[in-house]
Amino acid sequence: MSKNISPVSEPHGGSYTTDVVIIGAGPVGLFAVFELGLLDLECHLVDILDRPGGQCAELYPEKPIYDIPGIPVVSGQELTDNLLQQIKPFAAKYSLGEMAVALQKTDDDLWQVKTDMGTSITAKAVVIAAGGGSFQPKKPPIPDIDDFEGSSVFYSVRQMEKFKDKDLLIAGGGDSALDWTLALLPLARSLTLVHRRPNFRAAPDSVSKIRALVDAGDMEMIVGQVSALQGQGGQLDQVKIKTKTGEVIRKIDCLLPFFGLTMKLGPVAEFGLNLHENLIPVDTEKFETSTPGIFAIGDINFYPGKLKLILSGFHEAALMSQQVFRICRPDEKLRFQYTTASTDLQKKLGVR
Amino acid sequence: MSEQKQIILHVTDQQGKVHELIALDGWRAMEVIRDYGLPVKAECGGACSCATCHVYVDDDWADKLIAPDEDEEDMLDEAFEVQENSRLSCQILMSEDLSGLRLKLAPGSEPDTTD
Image (cartoon, rainbow over all chains, first blue to last red; front, side):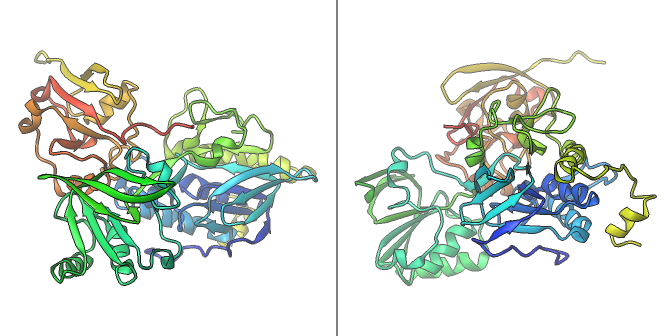
């Protein structure tokens, strides 16, 4: 990250307590930290990506964005970096590389969010700022691929040992495909890389290493696309690969497809929030869902007139924060203040 | 003002149904498809960064389009069942010359659904 302000993730599997847990560390989730922070509310963000920024960081870090008020042009990464700078005074906690998988009420009327890494965060309010959902690996639309997932088909490598002495087929042409090819080749019994064209978009250094390995006969590269899987009981036996000159068959134990990430709504769909076409309905006063104490802001929410713009999410964050304050601090008076005038706010921002 | 000709775009959806759309000059084919509410994921919104607006171009039209640039070719690596006539519809700019263009939404372009 350019300004070296990338936050450090809390250890996986811990138990944490905070005022507000925010699901999604995209631009809108980050700005929510600012608005909540001005009201002295502590935040803990959860994101499936290993760094903040959401779509801005994952899909278009270098593409210019032209519709942020007051900033004529900014890239996705710059916007993320600027937001991180802006919310730095509030010292939010982050659980990165984790997916929020469950949301439930505790006995003492708090909310508990659990992640796939065993982390548990207890909070007085929950803000869902999950955009288009969680970024998850793209699944090739090959018939019956579901039957082999987890046993023969893997979209990520958690333990390299699992692939020792196996016949592997890696599909894809980006950095993940090539990096894993280079990492797993010394362990594997055989390795075949399948890519749709002879050129790669991956780093040139990896590409030349792969070409040298192919020339030396250490691995095989096939220009084509995997079209069919065969096997039994979740165990792959062989795959068919479509090439320009016809079909090729390779006997393999494991297939590792690397075709980038795509957004899936994921477990948020199970949170009981009366989804409307994969979006979470909210009111336009507080941006609260059908469940009091749970809010949804940014691209994931729905209300009449909704526009999926970053600026809309920023506005929603500001209004949401007012109601979250009432929930978190029922005995305190909510004061509306401007950052230009309020010494109190300026102290919080560390500029006074 | 000279009289403007309507720009027609024919799109076959993932179920095989053909739709006749009216495009606007300078719009990306993806934007026209999305504007009509057809099922296209297009999750990066036209930044050539996701490959979820992958389409097949009708053979009669293949030569009439401006060839894909390197960015688009690279991004097609993240699409599935890529063919010679594969394109990302966010990289096709509609114009009068392209009126009548026929595209077919490719596998992987369908929006996310909750199972």
